[in-house]
Image 1 (cartoon, rainbow, N blue to C red):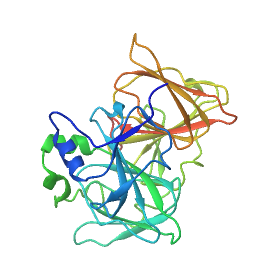
Image 2 (cartoon, helix red, strand yellow):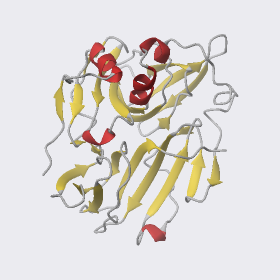
Image 3 (tube, helix red, strand yellow):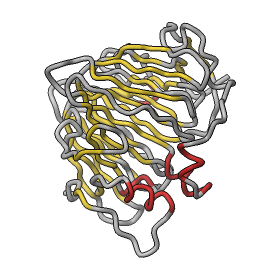
Image 4 (cartoon, helix red, strand yellow):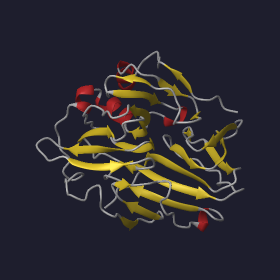
Length: 310
């Protein structure tokens, strides 16, 4: 069995610009092949955000993307922030609201709950609020921060840039409330929407070519390069072994089972999972998911994709 995720302060012989910024934030860094439960992983105060947090740099990210887990104490909010890298937010627990705005523009506010998915448009201001006075909110955020910080080598560029991407955010009233629409881009059905109220209950279309009883939907959000898909497979079934590039953050939404991870010709690593677990298969390692529970297994995967929605 693969070693569980460990928490450590990142130490490298020659640190990348991303690693130097990460170290300056002074919060834990979670490494390893997987996280057993995102909802209970240890977090520490994060002065830069105004809440609690931990970075997630699992082995399979390959500097293509990263993630962090953040928590907002009861009745509080995070600090306003904007950034030149993409962020996709998945709400793990609780409910609250987010303000989005650009310099000189009006604020848009939308509410979210456990299971919601949304993406603040690139380089817009965002501020997250805990709408509960009696318990914390916790969410997972997958980002393209390593790409941007390592490419431009400037924290100031990443966090203090005034450029407004008007083609990616037009501040229309229904930006976060429109019903969404189906796109056909030759890769199965893609649902284009800037806000998914509940990933757990989203209706998934059948995809029999992916296996008996398989269901899958892909999402396009905020004109991002970060893509999302949710997949479900039946009791006692498995997904066909496959491999791809780095950075696919696989979050288990329901069910229990295990995954096998292996580079070609090498021994297999076994990862047991349940609702709230996350794994990131390393670059071009084969991986295969098995449902051993008593109900269909459902997971969400976030990673960079090579297409752009219309």
